[in-house]
Length: 132
Image (cartoon, rainbow, N blue to C red):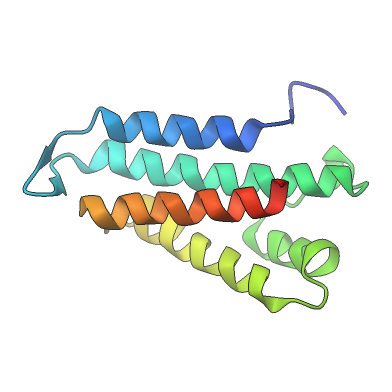
């Protein structure tokens, strides 16, 4: 596996980057004033989730070339390799996809500090569940 593509702990590095983006964002009345760093943080957190899944897949023998390239392919890989008898993992992934990628990054719907922080915690829990 080429090191430049996927390295151990990459998901944690992405989550740290997401938190850094939020640290520099201005807050007033418990709302982020600038949506750009918040959207970037959501996008980076979603990438962290994907990196965590990739790491597990690589450990299970999937090659770099075979890694999923779409959300549908990630769902299929989760079902095949990680959630064979447990739909909970797939539901959690679907929730993260909708919250982090669609709501937070793509549509920029969230600027409430508590909502953003809770979303990051949920991403952290999912990543930790996969990698520990």
